[in-house]
Length: 605
Image 1 (spheres, rainbow, N blue to C red):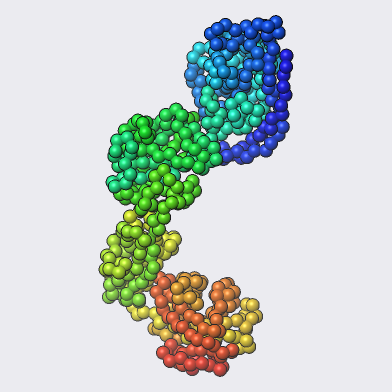
Image 2: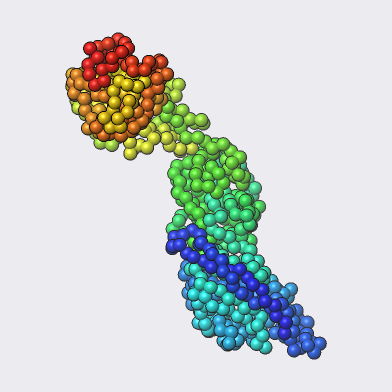
């Protein structure tokens, strides 16, 4: 007897949790003793022990029979056809060029008992074929073979003996993870690995990590796009993408538009996707596979789900989508990645990166008129909205009479408006906008609405808070009480007839970014009072208020905005001298002058 030994590097799997997508693997050396040749007694005496029927019997030489794959912890995988149970199994592979009669061979998990379980007479494995033995302690042969032992998920051996008690193959394995099989990376090969998608009864080369196959793009309302090659129709379609390096055999996998019915349509045997390749499936209810694959369902343009499941019924990828527009596909911006977009130029069977995705709408500006409404005023809310392709709907959500949504009217030049009715004095009207394009991409304003909202206060008289004075180059004038620095500062003044709650208002040194710094809540300003705010990039509230920006002595902008982002007061100034402030000649007045002796927090007069 001639036997060869080879060391095989076996990954041991550490499962990080039931919901982990992929196991973490550390390597440990395991041994697999592989038969290189068996010299039978008949061969020693010059006989081959075979008939002319092409079947190699137990006495044949150099039998290429292998324990090819096993699953020692089957929880949700394949069920046996006799008892309907998800049990352990061992796959035997025949690498011979002809069929092999396994009758009288032994299979065991204890090497000291070579014939713990014996293959029944006449058990055949065709050339290049596979045989599954259920290691479930069933000890019977009906539709399938059932051994009289179970595999230990904690690790042990599986050994195949010929009818003379000689080791044909031995595989030793460590602790196994639920529903992950262990086998040869190539059928009959010497390298072992793990398979997150077990392949009982089929080539191990068909194994593929589920996360490598993606629903990459789909078109649910194909009116003028490509036609299918079998029926010449503009049907709906789904594109799959294999982000792995190896070809993936997805024969036996299923696809559905009802996630509660995962087995709705099955991919034919031998269906594969090359590594980095695409597969286009027509969701047109024709239920056939000819030049192309056609499912037994159609996609709904009104919105539904698409699911892809492996042969064991586990979800590989799924998505739920909303209403779709004609001839606009929806897919991953980068093949296999997580971010989706609409495509005005669909890319069926090709990389999505060959097409420029439809960008979402852009809301450039929102304002109200009048800026400070009273109880007698209707309020016109206006916005400028653009889209790179075709804008669909612009809506405004407001809180008048409860949560209400109204469509905004386009006046031309990308301008939309809506008029809200007068409200009682002291009413706070809150609102936000949504713009939707024909690819159903939505942009909100404010960008995080409805968590943040625009608002305006209906007042008996409009507030009159102004930027009254500022110093943009403070070297020796006054020191802030929190950091003891000569920081820049600005002064606000209430020139109105009522106290003003400034909480939620904004200050900025960039009028294009009105919400740069928010005034803390409960900050109020009495009639005729001054408020000093340090523009020193301190961004804190201590004894005094400190913004998150500094003023530039070379000149820039200053803006005061209400909580609804309505500009209350703005100015643009030029170069400033050190320790010389710039302010209104009289508090709240329209004339400005420089002050050699600044008056922070006090009257300019």
